[in-house]
Length: 233
Image 1 (cartoon, helix red, strand yellow):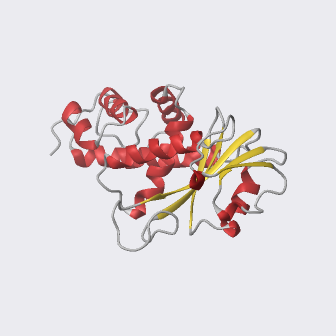
Image 2 (image 1 turned 45 degrees about the vertical axis):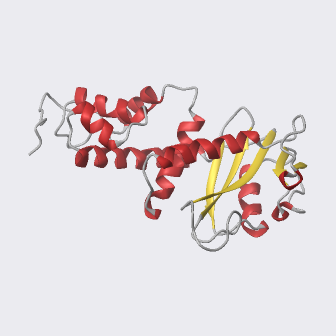
Image 3 (image 1 turned 45 degrees about the horizontal axis):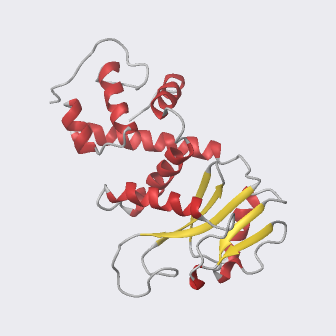
């Protein structure tokens, strides 16, 4: 039995709740601070089983929010890149084309938001439809020198940085923004000591959402969202 069962009136943020609003707000604050379920359990005196259920429901809600936000088109100065998520040490290929890795294509509007999408492989055939659906014609696009970007850009002004030639930045010609996002996302995922593939998209999109709202109070954002549409778990 849960020691914290508390029926202090209806919880307006959580459907069928067996915890008070005050306790739920504590859990939500832990989530927004990016605490692990173990850390949140210790600080709130709520079981890890319940914390994990609430965290999973919050990630599903954030995924829904990213789907709504993804309708926004990007324009201006845009950085493109792909990254590989998965085991650090595996047999076979490394880097681009690496076995057992999840490939994620990223689009970042400078000084703005990022958009991510897992793809089967980093090929023109898979990248181009995503690009066309997200970036307005006439934008300035920055990429590295990877061959899949050859001839990719027809309606954009295209600049490249050649990492293979030890180039990393020439004035505005860089992809430091999207690379910073990859570092942010991977640091977050490391704390979970491995994420099951079936949950990877939830964690990826949570990283995207946190990055896109890095200048906002995400606790208040989620609290207002859940007041309008309570969480089920």
